[in-house]
Structure formats: structure tokens, C-alpha cells
Length: 476
Image (cartoon, rainbow, N blue to C red; front, side, top):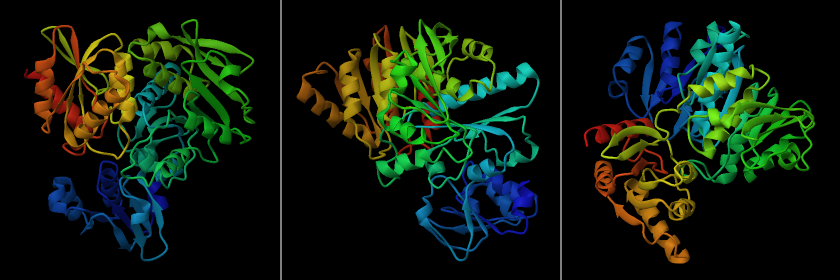
């Protein structure tokens, strides 16, 4: 399939990252070694890159901009902006994920959004897997921004297989894809260090819906996504699914939106997540069966249910919920020590995600660890969430955004008079910030790493940051 598509065409790979390394290995295997452009040479990239070079791949060092690429098919790493690329002749500019969506015969269920992508995608994958096991037909795959790259699995996929995909705005920037069902969990300012502004960021998110997409799922409590839903409701063959953790009827959720392709509301009624098409409604999962705390996790379940209802049996929802305890690095209990609980929520890379983590810990006494790489997003909403929580008594700040967050908290409490009891401390060193939080915690407290920032100022990614936090905590 891929071999036939690329047969005889010279391929270039821009950025040998997580998604492109397996692609480069596959191209060498089928006798089409690629041109590889990266900010480092093969020796610096490590053993696997050296093996690629031995197999015929050519390496070129480029940093920031990728001009004059001489190839027929150019694979862009998600972190490289399309407008930083130019080619010598007519070429197809694509990506591992874009080509996967073009070639796969499997049905695909894709998730994007500012927050909740990983949990919603993981749940979607669990639901699909449970359905495959229940009926003994097909296989379920999870990939995209999480899991493993899927392009090289295309060859073995069939129309009976199902794929759950997490897609970032970087991947969707120049996408032309049509997943079977697509979801935008929510939209808030994010990645504004990379995007030119909110308009470009939102436009990228909207690209998750293509001509072949038959279902669009989104959050009825988010103004930005409701504008998208209103626009897409005019498509004839696109079902609109709106979920809400606040409203409790089809009419309240849809209001004056009348989707041409039909509408479905997902909400909580009498303690049950309910699916309602405006005529018939049925309860599919008791909220009491959800083991992960917080309203945002109920919304994550709603997203995954909205994507999969009708494609899976209702009983899989309870089956999965009973044994789902969250994903690593999201309010993950790392340790209990001297009556203090230490939570790793390193995946919280935006203010809204940290606000959701705090909401999940309502009524708890909290020492919060915040700060990291600066994505040029506003932190006033984070200051409001921290000051108004009522249980946060200490904030240990670190990293490139630590001082910005410190200043926003000071400004917010000067303006409102709320949160003056909160102790603030800045330590540039991550370990120092964790040690300070440990020293400030009392019996009954929760120490929570929820950075509200990306990790790239000090770590390769949020997972490395979370593992370092857990290592430090394990040695306390």
C-alpha cells in the first residue's frame, strides 16, 4: 500500500522525530532510503540514525528553515511550520499522519483540542478495543500524538479495524484528512509561541473535519467550539454531537442549532451519562462508575462516548470505566509520605488544564508546583483559578514562566483581595522547587505538580518532566 504509493518517488524527511524515525526505517527497508533533514547530523542523532545512514539515507543539517528541498514527497515533522519549507520542484508536502489518514482502510476516530486530548483518545481506544474483543472482529489501534506512529501499520490494517488518534494543532496545520468521527474537546489559548495567533490556532483545529467525516463531537460549554459546531451544522452528511457537563436536555444544549445531518446531545441526567437524539434518549454510563476525579474527566468520557456511540455496544462503557484509573502524568498519585499525597500532573501544559486539576481536588489543602516553557499564552486565568480555589496555600514556581505566574498572582490578589494567604516562592531549578513544596507540605496536604506550561525549557517532553518529579519524590 505505502510501497505502491511511494514507488519510484524520492522522499525527504524534515525532522527525524518520534513519528518520522519509523517512517525512515520503513523507507530504507523497501529500498527507498530518504533524504533526512534535521538540526543535528546522524552521529548526534544516535545509533538508529547511524544505521539509517548505513542503509543509504542521506543526512543534511538544517536549522529552523528548510529551503530548496529536492524531492517528490516531503514528510514534515509536526513541529516544523509549513511556511518554513520550500521545494526545488513540484512536490507533495505531507506528514506521517496525513498519509496514514489517506491510505488506511480502517475507521478512524480523531481527537484534538486544547485540553483533554490524551485522556479522551485513550478512552476512545479502550472502548474500541473492548468492542473488538467483545465481537471477535477487527483490531484497535491508538496513535497520532500518543502511542506509536501508525503509517507503517497500514499494510496490515483492514476495514474491520478501528483507530483512535490524538492530533495536535501542529499535525493539523496543513491537514487534508477525513476521519470517520472527529472531536474538538475545547479551545483556549495555547501554543501561541508557534502559531501566529488564535485565528491560525483555531483554523488548524477545524482541519480535523474533512469531506468524508460523518460525525463531529464538541463541547457545548466552549464558546469557540460552539461557533465551529454552528458552522458545520450546515453540512448535509455530518452528524453534530454536543456534550455538556452543565446542561441536561437536548433543547438546552442545541438551542437554535438545527444540524442538517442530525444532532445528538450527551449530558448527565440523574447521575447517568445520557445520549439523546432529540426524540429518544438512553443512559449509557453511571457517573459513579468513573474512577478518575473531576468534572473534566466526566467531559473526557462524554467526548469518547460521543465519538463511539453506535460504533460500539453500550456495555463496553461500564466495562472500561470500572478498570480505568487515568493516564500516566495526569493527576497520577506518585507517593504517600507522612500523611502527604504527591500527585504528578505533568501533562497539564496550559492554565485551563491546571484549573481543571485544582477543580478535581476541591476541598483539599494544596501545595502547587507550577512553571515551565513559555508558550506566550496569558496566565491571568491561572492566577484566578489558584486564588479562588480556597485550598491552595503555597505555590512553588519554577522555569521560564515561573516569574510570570508569580507576577500574575500578585496582580490578581492586589486587584481582588483574594488569595493573600497564599505563599509564593520562585526557584529556577526544578528539583529545588519540588524540595520547597515538600518542605511546605503538612499532614493531610496534596503536593501537586501541575505546571500550566510546556516542558521544553528543561525537559524533552512532559513525560520526562513527570518521571523526574516521581524520581525526586521517591527519594524524599
